[in-house]
Length: 134
Image (cartoon, rainbow, N blue to C red):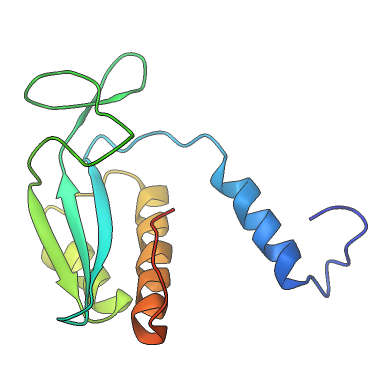
């Protein structure tokens, strides 16, 4: 938030600006892979496809088979390792973090990010709104 905004009473716009700013920070990619999150509205499910990757010496996520950097535009070109589904964010987190051993997560910040995204997806599912992964 900027200095002219009260820390006690931030507006929705202030919070959105803060969230947008935080979304632009550098994050280290998880060597255990990444997830593409989407909604299956007919089934009323939150879905998360897990993709394996390797991180090269430049910090880029690469296809574990070819070693080539993964594209950040368009659809994933390689095959997912698993699809997880849940009716709620909590159910999906339990399936990924508690029931899958070992869990396909290497970093705590990645786990926290997924929890936030699953909750956003749950809210969109309940409210009928659009969900776009951050």
